[in-house]
Length: 296
Ligand code: HEM
Image 1: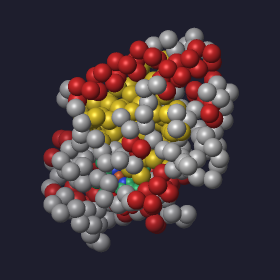
Image 2 (image 1 turned 90 degrees about the horizontal axis):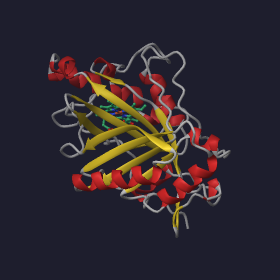
Image 3 (image 1 turned 180 degrees about the vertical axis):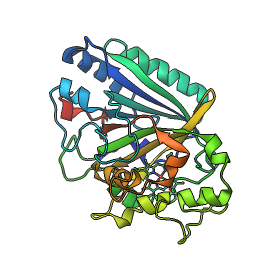
Image 4 (image 1 turned 60 degrees about the vertical axis):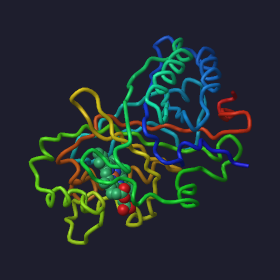
């Protein structure tokens, strides 16, 4: 039976931390294996979802089909930062205090070989809105379709039930957004903020027109699990999309960035990505996280 990291399919938690780690300069494969074995004891796939980056796979001399680092979009009309990382943890809790303890435990077991690269304090806003006020996730595939979009199947034990995740940290410019009328804001997204309805008259730059999943060939479905974030006076959206390959994300981003037809997604008029990385999320097995693909 295929077992998955269930947190990927579950509804958004009330609170979350997204932690990414780089390898310490002197990290070697034996020490990293010890750290990963200890981390496996913490990762239940629900309260903590784990992703592994290409740099870590390279150190362990392992290849997973389709897994590589994000390297930008050729021809993009907007900056798309590339920020590879070795490990990614999505800690998901209903109590914010529990996140402090999760992070403490994770840092403890990784201390020897990994450095914290980014820690994002994220939360659910209303019923699942971005801080711009727009509802996110409406067109996510549901049930069996969500499973099919997000989890690898037919590749064998250790790979089936795994998922590939694209992560982009977006920083909002609220002054730009506030300077627009709600009608102008609706045109950026292609949905009404008031009732979340899509409208046909939206310009071709509207975000939902750029990313309409059925409009790609082949179709480009992802399971989005993005969350708002805030840190002091800065805030934005932590974009997270699970799929069976990086093709759907790249197809959407190519269109959003203007690389395909020169039209840049309306989103860029009030927000911009400040990071971009890819990870492989291993499946689970009866004993916990299935790291057999890494010989662990
Ligand atoms: C600040 C960043 C972003 C914000 C605030 C945002 C917000 C939204 C909103 C409000 C919707 C409409 C409701 C829904 O169907 O979820 C949406 C749809 C969507 N977004 Fe984004 N988004 C962001 C970045 C991205 C990125 C980077 C991608 C992919 C590269 C993406 C892919 C999609 C897709 C696939 C849909 C559904 C399109 C459809 O099939 O109708 N979004 N987004």
